[in-house]
Amino acid sequence: MPKRASAPLVDPSTWRALHHLAGELEKLAPWEFASDTEWVGLVDPDDREYRLANILGNAREVFAAVIYRRTGIGWLLKVLDDDFAPDDLNTVEGMDCLKVEFVPRRELVKEDLAVLNAIGFKPAGRGSRWPQFRSSIPGWHPWHIDQAEADQLLRDLPRLIAFFRLFEGNPSMFERRSAHELPFLPAELPDRPLGLDDLDWRSCMRLPDPPLSPFTPTQDELDRLRKLQCTPGLVYEFDSALMPGASFIEEGRPCFGRMALLVESRSGTVIGAQVKPGGVAPGAATGSAFVSLLLQSPRRPSRLLLRNPRWPPVVEGVCGALGIEVRMAKRLPALEEALSHLGRFMAGGGMR
Image (cartoon, rainbow, N blue to C red; front, side, top):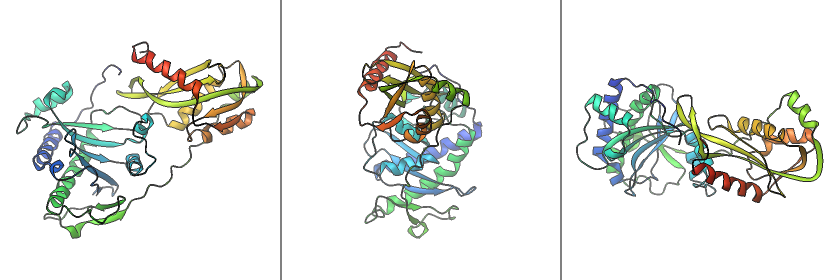
């Protein structure tokens, strides 16, 4: 983990309002009667954008409200699919959400404590009752919320509280509904408690991810690559993935590093490695790293093996211009061994 960055500033009056809402949510304790499978759609009253939210806590481990926005909605719908791999770090590329989690006081960091002390907040009880607000953006570590995100929570939390008050009295509302059928609240909440007739049930299906754009090298890079001697039978393995050990500070907050690695398949020789900020668009970061690493090679391969189905559209144009055949493989043994060594090296503090 990189050294700490500075937390963004949020107006004290906003913090007071947010912690008041957090207190209402904690008092309601929706995790006592709802699970993480009950989702609700929230329509923003200002821009009419929609978000999806749920409650964590029925497993008695994490007590939180999570609100998914933008690309996070696609990530969330992917969770409902059978092909979702929760252990794949690259899933954080879709984590776009805001969260208020109730934690023990010992888990608060100095920035959290400074806010709580400034507004004089104290929870009504002991244990996991201290609110901690966090923002997740694709490719970045969870971090403190900024003013715009705090304002969004001021709009969303009252809606979430209103919905779970309704759900508490109507626990069977999700029965006979499919996993993809979700209730949406009206953009403007009525001036009364929510009723079942206020819900707009919608079918939310995830569309296929669009292919990433091809990466276009500069003419100079392409000319230099063409000068490399093409070697028949030479096979390279390539991948680009987020790695926790390659994290660093970027734009004032900690981000994951995207590690790109190019390895000669037969000998296991590492041609090169390159780290780019996780916040850079995956296709652009991967294409740029591939060209850069290939330029470090003394020879041009005749074949390139990939294991991530997102990367062929990114590199096929470059490879086609160079006469390099691109193939998919379920495993890349040489690259995986190199990544394993690299991961242990960084975990041991060998890279900063």
